[in-house]
Image 1 (cartoon, rainbow, N blue to C red):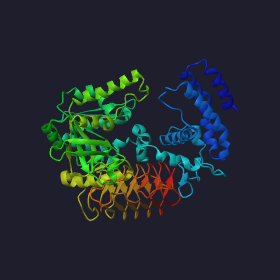
Image 2 (image 1 turned 60 degrees about the vertical axis):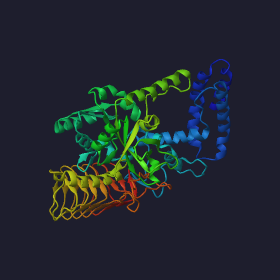
Image 3 (image 1 turned 30 degrees about the horizontal axis):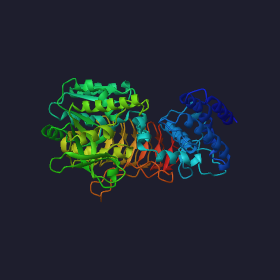
Image 4 (image 1 turned 135 degrees about the horizontal axis):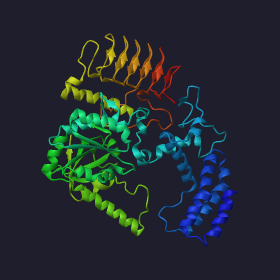
Length: 560
């Protein structure tokens, strides 16, 4: 009834108000009600939607006829429903749902466990008695997974790294005993003539300041953190802080993404960059033909090593040579970025582009690199060193193993000496207490003030600070969060997600948390901070959110 009345109002007002005002009225009078009704009624009889769909289409047609030059078309009913579902999941993933709504969400059991065998959605909702083409019980997760990656990873909140990123910013998560970006800092300091290191991110200054101060004291180099208050994109952030970057009159500067890990050949990259007189030099590595579609693909001239063609995440095969997300730039790159901004402003003035909140967002891989390639100013340095991304906790386990192996070659004093109860590459913090009968390793990192009981076995895992592992327990392919307690004779075990060893150049797959059926994929086991696991329980291939006390064994579940 309200939609029908609103349609009558719009018909009368279309002769009075311009199209922009009518569009605003449409959003407030019609679209708000339709958005609500579509989510509620999509789980009932499909015939219930026909009257609503007809009214909505009439109102949409009326607005588009009066505002036919608008660059942003109005969504149809199905798209509006998809938007509502994906927005709900986005808010839930980022913790932005109102407290009243969160308090009224009922889960499977009193323990707040989410059993994936009986449900396909992120939250347990009421199951409708009549199925339809659009069922909110299963639609939210399915719709979210079909969205483009740049939408799902909007603002890079580190959601795929949860629950580990709930306690510390993802760049500060310790791998092989050091925060992720400290590995980057140490790699940069190996380059002769390094003057300053700038960290650019969206995390509040209060969360990064202590780490920055510690790095300055430890390495005696100027390190600063520059915070983005609005999303600027990879290229926009660099351009926004161009004055700080050019303050020291550098001949060149490195640009490293914070979620990559590698044996960084930065000195070799700089030598090639200066010798070839490039504006941009990209660090490249080989990948499999199928995995290359998930990265920026490079076609190079084998003799001059100039980049002939670059496509970011192509839909079809281009090349097995991919970008590692590590670059060397000359300061002249800022003039190229300035041209992109100038072209955008001209498009806005001419009406070819709408003014939006992210008008200052420029993405390096999509807008800047391709332009430099066309101008013949980009080169590539191909490396055979180990390289990987850290998108998920499983990737942290993989990176932990390789950084420990790197310590054995370059910084042996960081590793715990091998003995009867320490096998392979192991890092144990000096304040940790490990019983002499426990067997640790290989590929294990143990944080500060951790206590490992007698007879316990720890393999291919990360044990974070102040955790306690009881006697005769097993921890394998897992991450144990801060202040966790695992009782005696308990088993915490996950499934490693390492690259296929039978495929040359295979990289770490960033597999989705849920498979196509909506069930949890086999993965490493993660215990969030302050989780208590009583004695004689088995936790396998599961994720436990912080501050939970388990009372039963868990297999292939997410404990909320």
